[in-house]
Length: 463
Ligand SMILES: [Zn+2]
Figure 1 (spheres, rainbow, N blue to C red):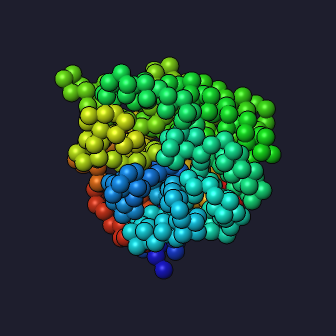
Figure 2: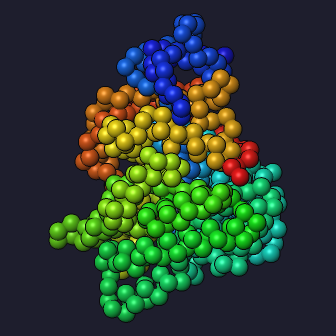
Figure 3: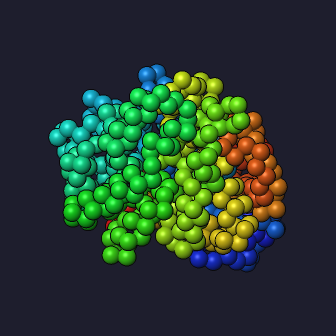
């Protein structure tokens, strides 16, 4: 039996903000009250906000990206970084291994994460080898606690699925109560542009962006939407939407009443593709900003921010895919096509979004909670998370809105050697972070233990 009272804070939900005391008992939220019930531990949150823990539904921990090359964060260092940033749950892309069944791949991911996990997590199952046998396994996913399937429309010759396979997955997803997540870029056309770039001797990181123009994201997004409809109305979640045209396709589909949602990621809200040009005299610094889809233009950033405020964008995730600059990104020093795609951000997400979104007045604290916790929980069937509600898991963040600090990679808690946000001054930071009632982060102190995090069996995804 353990209990904690968080008193004098302002509780923030997706719809409201109000002063109350919050009692945690046995890992759950036990009371929200004006009274002061007795508790073993008392935290004074005067002047602070009390938020449901952040949920990041797009991560790539411990992920194979090439021969003998795994992303830099495993389920321990990734979870430690997440927790310091106020994130207490995430959904990981559990990639299929070519030649293995989905059951074998799922079992590998369960095994690799079990003893390291500190926060709670779920899986999106990514199909890359869509044999008839593999497609037949979709009927089992819900029994495994999974309600989401990822398909790639990009990366031809590696993990891209053709339209016939994508369409089959969508039909089966609809039949078996799963949502489909799509990486929307036209891999065929990108392949043509990359061959042309290679022939022209273009090797610098900026050519990553130049060979993935925004029209190819808009086209793939529209195609995914239409395929999902033709598949009987399969629920569709468009991951990492980076471009106005792609977002508009989602907005049009939703206006027609279709079950389509859009995510964006922190990096698309802060940077344009100019970052890929690197620094004066050091073009390769641009490799730090290589992700797919690529960073876009300032107009797109403005449209995404507006989409967050208006409700057209439903979730802000990270696509945390931590390739170190020293040993991973450097593989592409002679050719941008060898730069591993992906950027880090699991720790910085909430601090950056709070500073630029809430402190600027564009987003209310409630909208912030909706985008980073409540909507992700509801979309993906995390039944006991994403809200400050009696009986819910006590995944709770005490948030100090006055705390000023500067983002420095050296002070972050993952295994990365750079941050996209290096040197940026922000206001607002977690003071305490609880997962199911356990205090994981207390100021600068780390109290999390590997193996305590649990795999979450998810309920129904949004339909
Ligand atoms: Zn991703």
